[in-house]
Length: 220
Ligand code: NI
Image 1 (tube, rainbow, N blue to C red):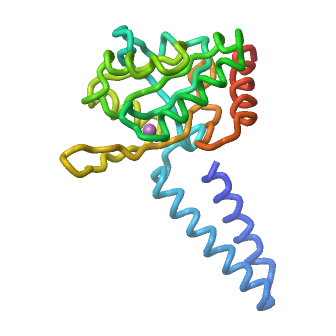
Image 2 (cartoon, rainbow, N blue to C red):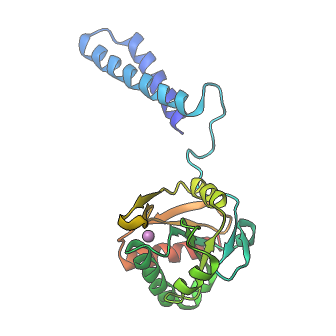
Image 3 (cartoon, rainbow, N blue to C red):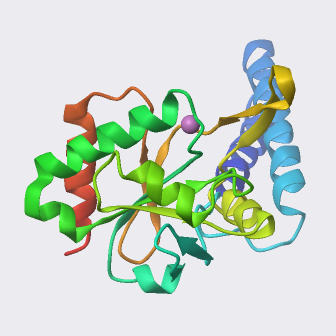
């Protein structure tokens, strides 16, 4: 999409340059050409010259196999046919995770039976401490339909990259640590395709609206 825009801008620039002779349009043409060149440079940097342009600029999501808080394996293929909401966090999180999980629990309660048409995944970015057992204990405070997931450091890093999720370990006094992390909930349709996010702090109304849309996307 970026490449296409760049090409159009570039063509416009070239056409204008041959057609206009006065100073002002020339300045405009130069500006357009400079912007076009910059965009082109970015395009070349991002995709490499001559490579095929991907269908969507950023792909979010992808294959994974992790372990649920019940100790069972769960893969992306198990989720085919079911829309799902994914959230990255950790059980020692002081605020963002418990708030999000509480709000998600409230949403599921409000959705009632419709809530069974989607899955909510809580993926630990702290697999060292978040074993299936500790996830199970932690999730007792929230809606039982929320599925905790953990795995090896490598598996967690890989799924984090697939979802463009960010996290960073922050050392605390006394050798303890906390983790800064992406607070958005990723919404994935029944084919595992990314369709949007719920941001931290969004109203319950907006949250419910997005979840309802996610559920109805299943039927489409
Ligand atoms: Ni958190």
